[in-house]
Image 1: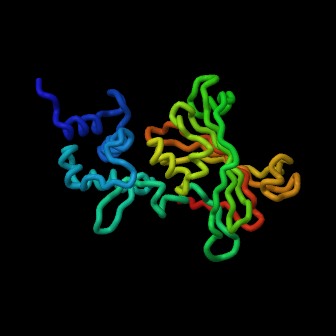
Image 2: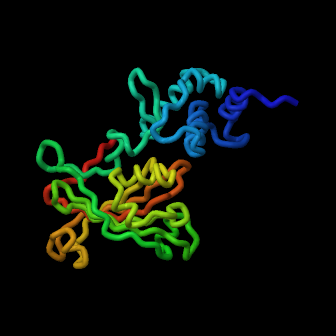
Image 3: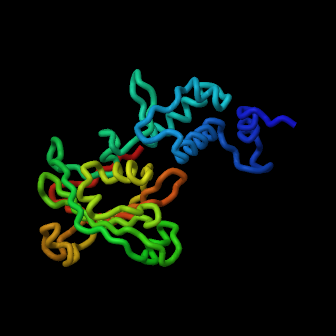
Amino acid sequence: MAEPRPETSLRTRAARPTGEGAAFSPLYRQIKDLLVQSLERGEWKPGELIPSEIDLAARFQVSQGTVRKAVDELAAEHMLLRRQGKGTFVATHHEARVRYRFLRLAPDEEGEPGRAESRILECRRLRAPAEIARALDLRAGETVVMIRRLLSMGQTPTVLDDIWLPGSIFRGLTLELLSANKAPLYGLFESEFGVSMVRADEKLRAVAAPAEVCTLLNVAAGAPLLQVDRVSYTYGDRPMEIRRGLYLTDRYHYRNSLN
């Protein structure tokens, strides 16, 4: 018996009532999932042009409008970037529009923020603490890479980040490599380790500055700081980074947009 054409198979699944199997999934969402799978496999690398909507429609045997709706969602989620007259590209953290997408710190004064300067203070491999192992979906005792980074805005220490990454994926990540890197940190993860961070969940709370970070941030013990706990994910919602940031907010604020 011949296999069904892709469009027929997709439409059958999309139209199936929820009582007969999988929950209803619109056709464009199925195309979106297939595109994400291609991104995850590395079929199109960060910064590369993806096939046109006409070519993708032919590949999946669906209408161009269905493909466009799937691509629109991926562009809204910053996985793809549309460039007028040039096509659609895989988002990369080397791209100016994406580079600081996860850095939501903005100056209180109007105008451009001071230049962000990153200094790596520490990079070491260790057994994952239980809480970190759970958050990264690792087995107890697996190795992680721990990074401590100080981010200065306009030459003023502003953010102290503690970062944990799966050791098996980030083999070869060393203090020397990080210190020599001039690209954004997530850009380095892309180019050297093939890991693209595509979304993040964050929790924010006000805390008093611990004594051990006061010298680094040039604040008094107990000074008010904003603590930002982040889990960053790659394609397929796989957790790839745990980050705890302590933010000095005397001249900056944490900005977010709600739709």
